[in-house]
Image (cartoon, one colour):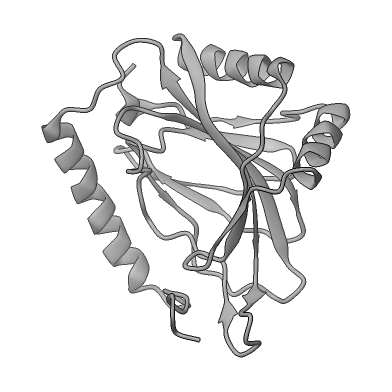
Length: 211
């Protein structure tokens, strides 16, 4: 599959109620967390049971039509957060980007688990920009490494939150990006970021050492 053409599909009823409960039980018993202040979200480094890994892998493989391996995943909560000094607020952001922490190809499944706020996801699939509004227990598929993706600027209220599970799959074969491919994707990312930055709203959060 050409990952620039990765399918952008919304999958309904992604997990059963029992599976969601199990995932939240795992989150509550996971101590490995990180707060990403520049985007204002907390990430839990969870370990999913094998039956859930097998299920989500099968769903992803059926969508892309090739063998995949679940390589990375995490549970994240986006919310407005106050600094330790109680003086600075961090607002959730997701600017146009690619998942360039990964060297090779990734097929991403973004599962919205629980939320009390609407926050669209926009994907540039090289043919058009598509905007998706997910409901709880819906998932969106795209290539995080090849399709620029982002969320519109939105100022969260104090009680608003969005929780999601991000699943990143690698192809079993041909997990390689050429230099030319990387440069083309980075050019697309930079263009979309410049457009996003000029739209009204908050563009950045306080940086390390600013409080």
